[in-house]
Image 1 (cartoon, helix red, strand yellow):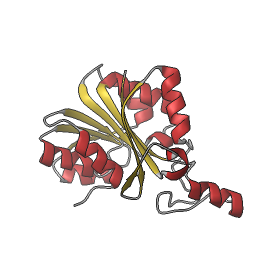
Image 2 (image 1 turned 30 degrees about the horizontal axis):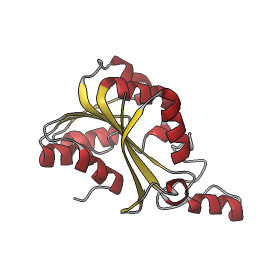
Image 3 (image 1 turned 180 degrees about the vertical axis):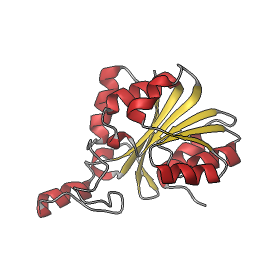
Length: 195
């Protein structure tokens, strides 16, 4: 099974044999790839019971929980990597969730849809409506996205908090883009962070 493009970037940069916590792990696709291809000890936290059941059926160690509430119980530096893929924008307190990731993991991967991408801007400018795209398929009233973060917003947030960026990848579909004009052109971003 092939991974979503942001998950493939993450999987390709996690060191073999690492201890990994995947927060908002969905059905466990990334965890399974890390376990099977990289020999990682992968654990997951997922809010949706159906996704938890799917992940457990794959033989993965996943518990049901909410990133906004349950990360506080994890010990400092208990994982080599803490991963938050396409979940930051759904958290009630994304800044607190990010702080927990950087506390729990020696490094943290964060990926999110870029709400400043030109198609999103154009949809708002010309249509005057919130966009519905392949990357953002839900209507405004049905979306789990409650914080509309852009690449530039995230970079500024990291700078203000003194977080070190070890790597950044900007994606349009399955294609990587350079960091030049990423805020305008990239549909998704992946950051590798540490304190």
